[in-house]
Amino acid sequence: MYRSSLSAKEIATVIAGEGITLDETKHNQLQLAMFKIVQRYNGSLGLHVNVAGNDANDGLTPATALQTINEALVRSLGYKQSTIVLGSDITITEAPIPVNGTRISFNGPGVQRNITFASSSWTTDPDGTKRTLGFLGAYDLNFDRINIINNVTESGLTAVCLGSGGFVSFTNVNYYVASPSVRPMFWGGNLTGITSNNLNFGNTDAAGRFLVNVPAGGDPNTIWPWRSNRTSM
Image (cartoon, rainbow, N blue to C red; front, side):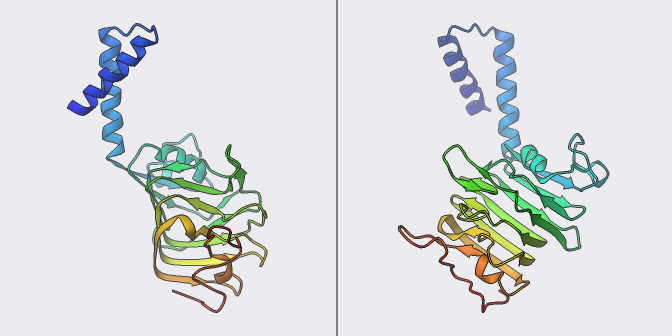
């Protein structure tokens, strides 16, 4: 409480320095908003996604599911952790927004669900980086009872999922690739760790296009540590 109140006063001082008058009512509103932000960051969120859902829904129950993973990630911003429960198989056709500092879990609710990354599901960030999923800061990315199907072949991608300082875990996950020319799924060079419990590579090329580790000046096609002769972990 003290810290959030102090921060509100500090921001009010900056606002005043810009020539904007902040009366007592607005100051109190600002303080309350910052307190809610602190509460939100320390909390968790559960969201449901279904291809038959609607992104105008609240996403809090299966009956009011969202339609896209992108909208679920938008709603997750600012929370410490978010669980995205898939009520159906989902295809990602456009690159979702990047996520900063949030623990994200993709769950199949007692059944195996597909997340398919379409060939169009990538974008170029302002810094020139190409990616589909982007996670920044200290984050955890968890997949539980998910089939990951990778169709992304854009040659400029280092990997479909780019992160910075994150930890990725897999439980009952099957990974498939559409062809040998798809880009690797994860960039190992910026991961702090990977753990798996029943991670399976569903076809011959999958293990070789799962994880890429790019050392300075190295070949972006150098795969580590899983190669095509590894079928499961």
